[in-house]
Image (cartoon, rainbow, N blue to C red):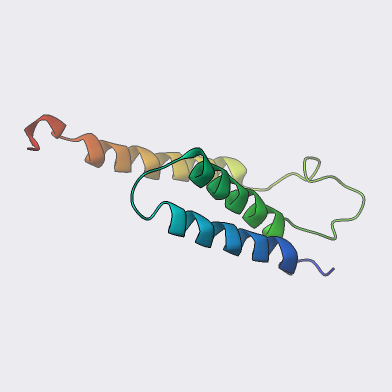
Length: 93
């Protein structure tokens, strides 16, 4: 399989699990089945997009360039979002 191509089977499994989650959790009641379907969808989605064709190197051996600035930017965005989420929470009725 070429690098950058989405694997069809895991993508289909992710789609089916996501639809199953949406249908079973539509009422707002979350059960173990809903959680299991959601986790299956997430794992299958990662499997569908996982890079292929990187040779004999494992994904852990491949160093990602620019990971620290990206992680810092993501942490900053989450921190700003958390601040505005909880800012003056006591005054919200």
